[in-house]
Image (cartoon, rainbow, N blue to C red; front, side):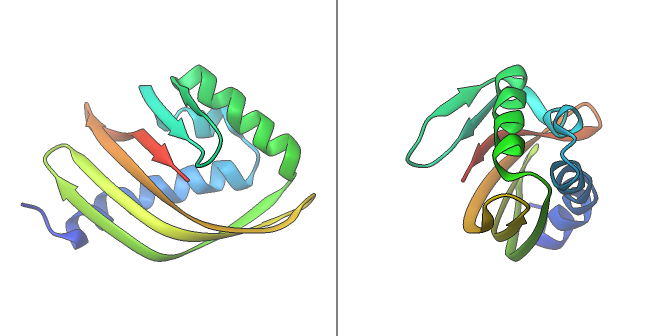
Length: 122
C-alpha cells in the first residue's frame, strides 16, 4: 500500500493545476480534470453527473463568485490501488460574494497515465 507521501507527490501537481484553473475562471480546463463518469455533489443541494454537466455547474459557480483565490488547509492524501482520496478545508475569497469556507473530499481515479476526479463532494 502506498503512503500518504506517495499519494501527495502524485496528486499535488495535478491538484495545483486544477485549483489554478478554478481560480482563473477557466471552467473548460477545470472540467477536463473530471472523469467522463464523474459525480459532483454539493451538500444540501443536488448532484450532477458527467463532465459536461459538471462544466455547466462550474460555469454557474464562476458567474456567482467572479474571480477567486483559494487557500487549502488540513490536506489529507490517501492512496489505494488506482485511487487517491483527497480531503481538505478551503477558504475561497471571491470577487462577488465575499469569503466562502468549507471542506471537501475528492476521489481521483487513475486512467491511463494520469488521475481524474471521479467523485467530488463539498
